[in-house]
Amino acid sequence: MKPRIAIPVPNSKRPLYARVALPQYERAIRSAGGEPVVIDPKATSSEIAQAVKGCDGILLPGSPADVDPEKYGATRHPDTAAADALRDNTDELLLQDAYNMRKPVFGICYGVQSLNVWRTGTLDQALPPGVKHSAGTKVAQAHRAEVDPESKLAAILRSAHALPESSEPTITVNSSHHQALETVGDGLRLVAWCPDDDVKEAVEGTAPDHFVLGVQWHPERTYDSEPVSRAMFQAFIRAAADWHEQLAKKQQDFESVR
Image (cartoon, rainbow, N blue to C red; front, side):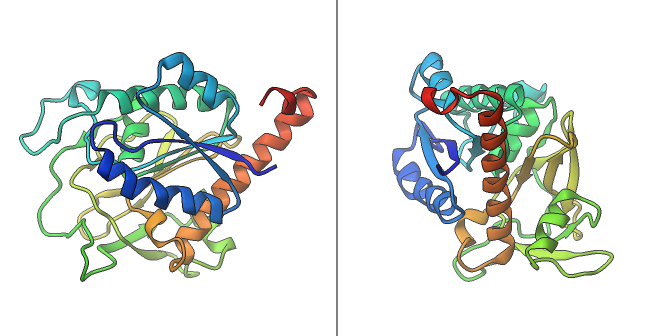
């Protein structure tokens, strides 16, 4: 059985955005060997909790919304977009389940920001000028990102031959965002950053027994063309498959209740 990955509809207020964006995540999950389980943010909390019980991992996608600054004790910046309370509630329910059960977590763009705030971190609502953090139609890659050579992320990329063997390995990323992580949340550590302005680009969990990865860029958009993108999705799906296998060994009736 393919590992089942819970993924919330990216935005509860903009159905057109969701219809365009969601298939990219679903396709990347399927290509990496998983089965996406779409979670409707408009569902009740009990319905969401019931749906995620049968999943082996969660993927938090991007969104045109911004996390409500009140959640991390900040005053709203004029450029901060409106929050999506239903998406926020869904992310919190999925993260609670994932951390309680040690299910793998993969956060992308808004998803890593949501993860970071849930882990008591903060966000930078106005990035410094100078570096383009949004790739456009003419520029596929926005900027460079340095990867901590001692990180789990580096190990994932090296094992897939997607990272140069150097003391300061660097990749190029297709970021598309106007906010980023500021204070890194509890149980997370910084593992990639833009060397030109120090904007935080990726974090991972510090617990050795729990796969948690969050990136500020959009690997779902470049799954077919970028080894880095494929390596991260494939590592996430492998972790979900391993989690499923371990739980199935502990609970003989696990499959029957899915």
